[in-house]
Image (cartoon, rainbow, N blue to C red; front, side, top):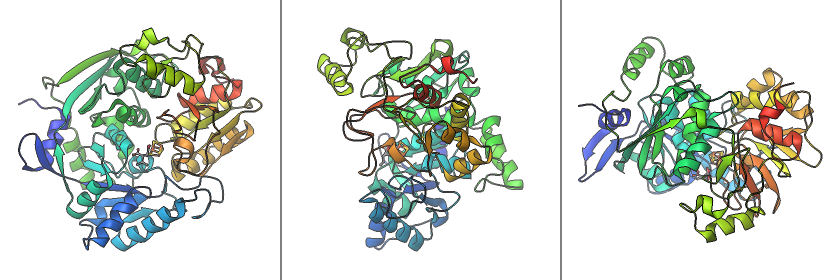
Length: 469
Ligand SMILES: CC(C)[C@H](C(=O)O)[C@@H](O)C(=O)O
Ligand code: SF4
């Protein structure tokens, strides 16, 4: 019978049917970070249970770590130290590979996993973090879980799962020059809404998706959780195999050839049936930015804040009014020209080397506008080192950006650093919820190049007007 790539992975990992659509699924990788993963490890140890397969579990420090140069366990986050030390002790006691502060492999969990070759096509991978869906970009079934489920996965390498439904989004045609994977993700959120993929695994396919490199695919899949999806997946192809070859935890030698031969079979059959099947024209996607407090509140950069009537299908008048109040905006205000206080390039959405390169190409030889605080936080220590090796740090610093150590940083407010109340921030991150980047902070989501152009202009700006000099 014709199957989707999701079904192929599901069938290969089904240990037991548990009635209805529920099954016990074998888990190949468990990833942990210090904000939620340490708790799972500690609780497991307290219950007297061992980590079943320590070599298949990995931990990192990313969420509550300081990202200022010279960081230590105790800087920045008032409550961070306890999470860091507890995770370190628990990971070491369990014999798990920990990408600790100071480790050259440290980074945001969804950045370091592909970089290390931990996530591979056809694997099941879980992490107590909602953006685990990013890693479906490499053809794995990767999804976010809670800490209690993480405990179960660590103890048994299985999880009880209600089978999600399947959605395919085929992106036909090609993205126009200057239109990025982030713009595509925001376009899809604006088109289908923040609950548009609820309960589904979204398979992205089509020529515009195949044309993305692995980093662009990671950006696209990253925002599937903003879409309420169970996860996202892009079946692996030569682009992924080339990316993975030689990575530390990827198979090597004869095992590599066997793996690639298997991975080539992991795509949806031509006549596979999806519960929902959408087609989107890539040529309709323009550079995007959000105006409100949900990722679905996205409009083309050249557009304006919508009136309620334009979004009435999804937001009540009250929700629309509340978003406008929070953001300090009025309907019909053009997005381009909105003055900003800060610009942030970072997060598991858009802080990989290609993101930093594209932003640096705009910043080179220029300086951010007076009064704008601009920050760049590489997604991993490896991204940081690679960027420095090609001089990108010097471009960012000369342009007036702070150049940071890797971590989640001001993607989300964890009680440490934040932008100020009512400050308007243009940000390459994935969530613009109220107070996401600090109490009262107003976040506008966009691509790294839009963040860079806006930092230079001092207001939301179109990167196509700031193409490399
Ligand atoms: C703290 C963590 C559990 C959370 C998540 O699950 O996604 C964070 O990474 C986020 O982006 O909001
Ligand atoms: S970078 Fe942001 S979205 Fe990604 S895992 Fe960290 S806090 Fe979550």
